[in-house]
Image (cartoon, rainbow, N blue to C red; front, top):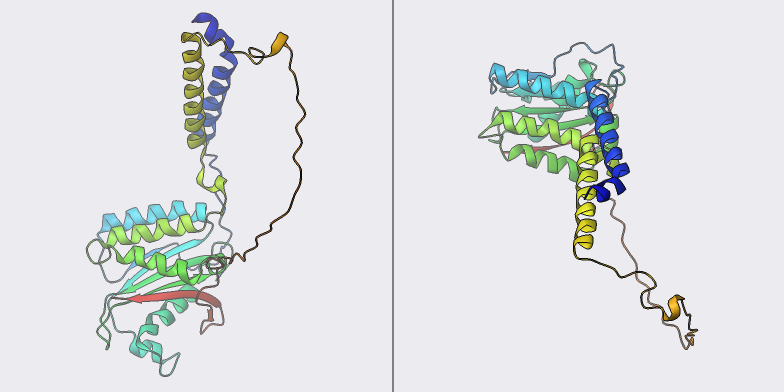
Length: 287
């Protein structure tokens, strides 16, 4: 057994070094992917505007902390607004004959623009969810997700619908959970579409350790079972012998088919210009 472990001591050493590096990196707070906010002109540091008072003070503070973390990881401002008031008169000031389900869109765009939200610059990279609990003339509660900058470039119509669907799963029974889902969805959606985006150092360490253990168990089982088959066991005279085989080419059949490309995640969902002249994307749901 001692001889066996001496044979693989370099493997254990590699795992120990990897574990040490992981501990040092996290101790220093050097988490990969974190970004620095460069917008100094935003009019407020607040991100949770619970005017409808559907959240407790503790829930608001928890959301603020979560948003603060997710913003640096996603590289965009994440804003939440709840209302409980009619926006009919408000919307009429900006658009004549505006459909009822678009009132909240006008408010969301203007709220974002007027506060100069944006992670990289005023009216830059960011996203805002406005949930108005007031039932308008159509008898519905309307919600709007407005994107800007990098989020506008990322979110397609399908992604916007999916995020709003996720929020609506819990919004009537547990608003906090619904808005927590909103924040986390934005974080996941804004990660680069690569394997590295889903792997952290601890995950890599765990995976490497599991693979190592399985490999060592396999090697140990071979020795316990007395495995002795070598590469030259079945070679005549202990030397390899090669036989020449040739395949005769007779005919060729070629089958072709057209493969459609999936362009559903190309971003730019709900593109429009706000009353302040800023390019936004977005979409809404009603309940």
